[in-house]
Image 1 (cartoon, rainbow, N blue to C red):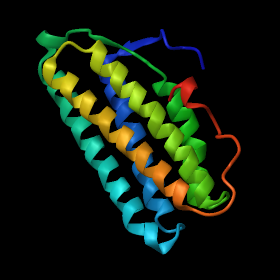
Image 2 (image 1 turned 90 degrees about the vertical axis):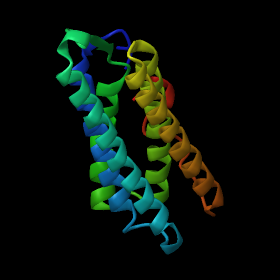
Image 3 (image 1 turned 90 degrees about the horizontal axis):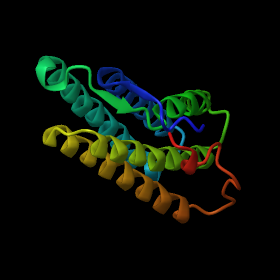
Length: 173
């Protein structure tokens, strides 16, 4: 997955980031129908959080589009966003079809959230506009909170945990 140096148009970056959040929301929503009853509200809450992240990114995208003189042909480091979409699509399908256990899916979502945290953090350092920088820092913190909450849930759950995630957070999202 070593394409960290790839650059993309800022509006394309925003579109892909929105798509990631949309799929994550769908994953959490589907998982809420499969997990233990005590976790339904948390999975539903994560889904709502991801919808809010979509909206925040959409507002950022609208801001960029409405101020072309400020952003012009601004480019963003791809930062693993394409890799994340490729990893997220089969995970989404696995969750929707219930082909794998919800615990394994939680582990894979935790890994994705950890990687997404890094994507947002990289975006916050690449962008110069203070409003958008704050937007990405907030999204990074949100992903960090989700990853930590998922880790806590996984630590509460008895039984075997998957030995290896479907992909590594170090590889990027």
